[in-house]
Figure 1 (cartoon, rainbow, N blue to C red):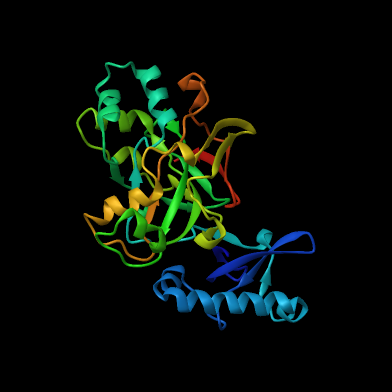
Figure 2: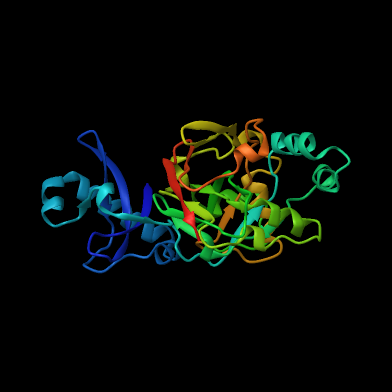
Length: 312
């Protein structure tokens, strides 16, 4: 299933499931009553809750005329997309997890750079925290942070945990994953680099609105192998990233297993798993400015689109 968290035309939020009919994409309201359905509650309900959701979607799509008359079918144009997981307990970022990204860093910074040497010698994932308040949904406007002149972007595969897990092996990790989504790890690059020179990474990654996510959480049964997905990113229609998850240094399974050795992973916890290299374009030309439109598309996950708004 392709699941979204949306704000209905009346202003209330619910989980909706995307489906195709009449040559268009529609959204089925997955709330069992006039209230809403929360993604965190859905994930906490486990397999039983997901089965009930599939049954509800099947019932709605089997009699669309009746579902439309009861207000259970919405157009994507009539809703506001929120982040698929609006209030995750944890968002774990993974630094430079693609081989071509490491090679690009070496070309830009030089082989003698301490950053490059650290990346080359690392045998385990390098992680950082991204706060839940950084999230913004598909279609949302991203305020341009007044404290940066180097606003950068990274298309990344987002991974969402579906079952509590601790100390699991890579072989066990895949059964703990609820699904996947597009994410855009926006950075204040000069702030990030100054922090990294001091051995920390926090402020450059945690300004509000710097983690667009969505439009959908696509359940893992629809994706298959997460190491066989293409990742592309366009800015104003120009292709800036064109890679694939096959070149990850640490696979999705290894990432989930590794971090489960240090903490209990709970339903709704998120990983952003690193980004492939950008096109070899001079850095100043790559940085975002107000008015830019960023689109990210990962195989099977739809397309995440956001616009950079005015400075704030």
